Image (cartoon, rainbow, N blue to C red; front, side, top):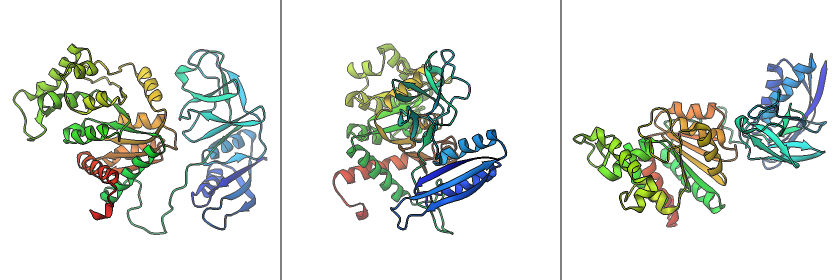
Length: 412
């Protein structure tokens, strides 16, 4: 039988890394023997385990070792990473290493080197001793790429609180958890992110405008609570419709009633912006005087509007070239430490796929399936909030103002 030693370090018990690795070894057709284990005697103390993994063939063993790597297992005896040149532009070598969103290191010339710009579903390019992720479509012929799994190690996910044997409402996605406490937690996370010098990202959908929460987001931008905005065509379009006509999808934002010929308003709004040359020009010329997009322009908050096949217009700033939109999102994600995703499925998942696992994510939607899809597609650090996005954003803005004023939340 083929065998090799692996090791696990850190909080491997309470994060369940150790039992997951052992289960995965058996599920993938292997066997294990724990040769050494040292369990921390207090909660802050790390633990260590050295495990011999065996399989009936070298290939099965390699497959098992690659599988348990995602939980932080690494080989005891390490080799330098195997490298191969990209054969053509946009083509990675066969057996290229496919990244996760977890912090990763590669061994180059006997030294462990952190992989920069970590992102899931990419290759790793090594240039001048520096390792960085590169999406498949951006790799260039001749670039040196990591292949296989040897010489690569992954830091396991941050440990989470482990519930007791039986507790209510411990699911990551629940419509019945106390919303007030969740709002407080998210507001504190946003404030702490800013205090670290990192940025807060909002990924927003049009329901923000439809639900009447646009002014709350506008004030959060003006107050410096949001540093970057990602959206599609719909959020800015209905935000501008609301600013110009007082409606969203033809429904009065203040009165909740349909307006005469209101179904035309969003088209007239986009036509106005296109005629002026763009959102910034509309603000500069005094045509667009309020709203989320007006606040972004006035506050200098960058935004990326990634379009889709169904967009009306679209607005001039909307990027309809998907790879180009993806690259622009990557650039704007530099320095982001917290992401708030509100009422948008596709843009939330797209953004989650670009974020490293260390970035905290809160996903708010009335549909629990949205949060589940985001987590199932790899953004496992996301916290789900199942509620009406309009009510949530109103309460979040109020909580942020309370924190800024130094008021104790328990006074509510």
